[in-house]
Amino acid sequence: MSIAEAPGLRERKRIATRKAIQHAVLQLALDRGLEHVTVEEISRVADVSPRTFFNYFVSKEAAIAGDAPDFLDEVALDRFVAGAPEGNLIRDLGSLMAEAADHASEDRETLIMRKDLHNRYPHLFALRMAGMRNFEDELSGVVGRRLANDDPDLARDPEALASRGRLVTLVALGALRHAWTSWADADKGSTVPLASVIRDSFAQLEGILVQAGRV
Amino acid sequence: MSIAEAPGLRERKRIATRKAIQHAVLQLALDRGLEHVTVEEISRVADVSPRTFFNYFVSKEAAIAGDAPDFLDEVALDRFVAGAPEGNLIRDLGSLMAEAADHASEDRETLIMRKDLHNRYPHLFALRMAGMRNFEDELSGVVGRRLANDDPDLARDPEALASRGRLVTLVALGALRHAWTSWADADKGSTVPLASVIRDSFAQLEGILVQAGRV
DNA sequence: ATGCAACATTGCAGGCTGTGCAATAATTGA
DNA sequence: TCAATTATTGCACAGCCTGCAATGTTGCAT
Image 1 (cartoon, each protein chain N blue to C red):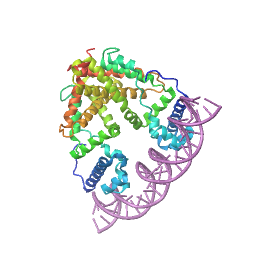
Image 2: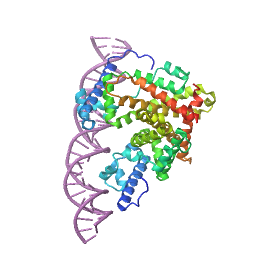
Image 3: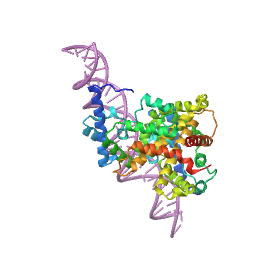
Image 4: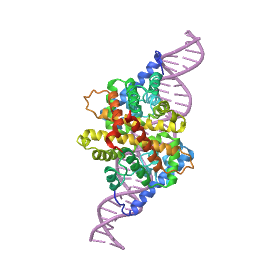
């Protein structure tokens, strides 16, 4: 990951094509409904051949769903593993996710179109979550490292460590989903950034036990 | 929901056909890999026409993924809402899920075949999660009721209540996923029931949240 | 039992999806 | 400028999935 080299013409074109396709499919799906849009039309609008469409995306829905988040740079991860910024696992995870959301460099227009479509076609949302398996696995590892750092006892049992890392990760993704839908359900005019909604969801998660059951 | 009437011939046949299709697709997919199985073959093995296959399932993968869990009867839900069995939100949720898993009346053979396929084709697992939207919404409502019961203050703000209900639900589904994969990853010979793995995951989750809330 | 209404199954036609392959075109780096 | 690499495209084709109309089956009231 680290620093992005200045990409050559080839790479720039690739990115442009990718964006053109995504933009086309979002536009068309919003206009006339996902089920009435064919790959042929999308390709026409995006100015590529239908065959090329499939070189970029395996399906219509994949083009809409959006790419899985790029992972953060090592520095941010190392900070998290070491117990920053607050020393509280859940809140720190929230911060990490919020940062990741900020780094997703997509223009606001695209984001909003996707948001609408996710509202209209819930299965797209599910698809996106499904596409995060990689992210999920990487995150599990990172969380595991953090847990080992927090609790040397746990570090001595690699299996328990992995299992717990995975549990924390899956739970965190639940909170992330909550944030996503909260953000998506907000009024159209709302300008609250996704990152802060994420932080909020994680903060609430932390408080769940306090209010609900004093055991 | 309540008590199941004795189903008539029509209904019994329907169920039989459904099972036949599911069994056929599982068998074939295990044998030669999901991508080398066609609907035509499945139908031949299940002894229905290809058209009938699509009357039962919208796709090959849907037939494999398995149905969303039926919801529990009102009695069990009311008990949960009232604060049973332990008065601890997370653990009680775990019990609820464990019960639901027990009630899923599928023969062990089917369960194991699915387990293997979920291991081999992770996107099937994702598909299953995606198919749980209904369950998700219902559960959110139930959790909301429980929360209102636990915390009258919260009950006075319906929006906050709904949001929190959804958060708890999504997080719980994360724990459920954890349980599922733990169970699926276990040795083939293992006979630990899914229900107890579920309870275990939720207990761990509680530990995590408690720790987070302490700081 | 009979007949009718409701529902299930099937075949068929047809559009759309998604992939392998081989030809062509564009970009890169020496 | 030239050769290697990589991207785009057209074509052919298997398979997915749906609508529709015909044909069986089951349920139910008489």
